Image 1 (cartoon, one colour):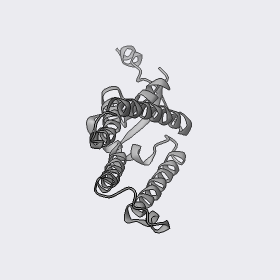
Image 2 (image 1 turned 180 degrees about the horizontal axis):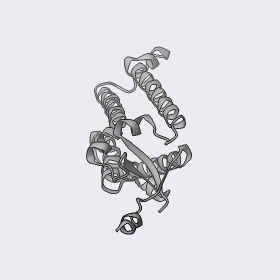
Image 3 (image 1 turned 30 degrees about the vertical axis):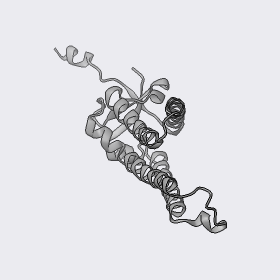
Image 4 (image 1 turned 45 degrees about the vertical axis):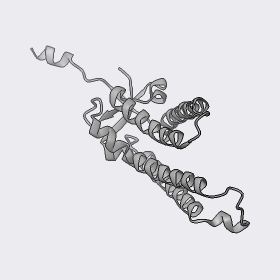
Length: 185
């Protein structure tokens, strides 16, 4: 009887560090840029680019959330043979995935708000109105610069967490109670 219990082994995982995760992020970014480009080509005849703005804001969210929940990995992670698991080394639950992506979701909503504001402004103003150097310091530009600075700080915090944790957990991994692992079994 004891032998039966010992024959069962949990799968062995190794935690994934910075470079494979960065590689997966890069692959996912390329996939999303190609998708956005193809979408832009297919919707080019639309008079209203608001549809394109909305779709290109929504697709990256669902890309991450759906693939991470359904398969435990985005396409980039799948290509590099890494995946996301929860603290019990099981596939992530929907709450793990949502919490893991909560920072990204927030950034995506802010980015969409900035883009929507720019779109609405461009619809209501004459693009020929250039008032010189001062036109570069509009509230919209200042907000976009502050947003970019905040994104930079968030990514630096993520890297500090990732590089200083023996299990390579970034801040979003801790929030979602997940690990990124390579299945060595």
